[in-house]
Length: 193
Image 1 (cartoon, rainbow, N blue to C red):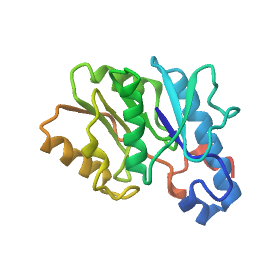
Image 2: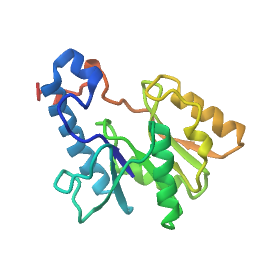
Image 3: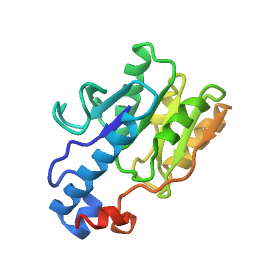
Image 4: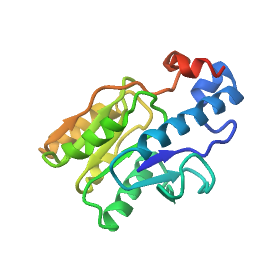
């Protein structure tokens, strides 16, 4: 499952936009969406994209490769939980969710995440900002989506504490960098400015 914001000016990469402007932030985000679609499109799994506001039938995520849904819920945690509920309700046995703002994510990491779920309850990919870029599980753990202050530096740690409290076996993926601030921009993204 890929979680995306609809690519609209003034609605994406708002922290970054404060430094570089709304139009440039939108351009950066569109490239991030393209990259995410390429990486996820090559993964050995069925794929779905979940949109923040409306389903975009003609974007980077091909309808021939990606099922398309709307995110449902009040906050990010509830929207992610509801997406896992939908996936498990459709009979999937292993589900991972990724965001759309990590230029370091690779198809190999996604494939590793799925394989790791053969021997673990949970897989998590920590982001350098204290969040995570990937979360996967074989059954729903609603606790992961409660009592979190989303988009803060404690989300990964708080989720690890949930995993430990429940005595779950987990696999941690490599730490990667999300693109949230100007300092997070790769050379490729800087060249778009």
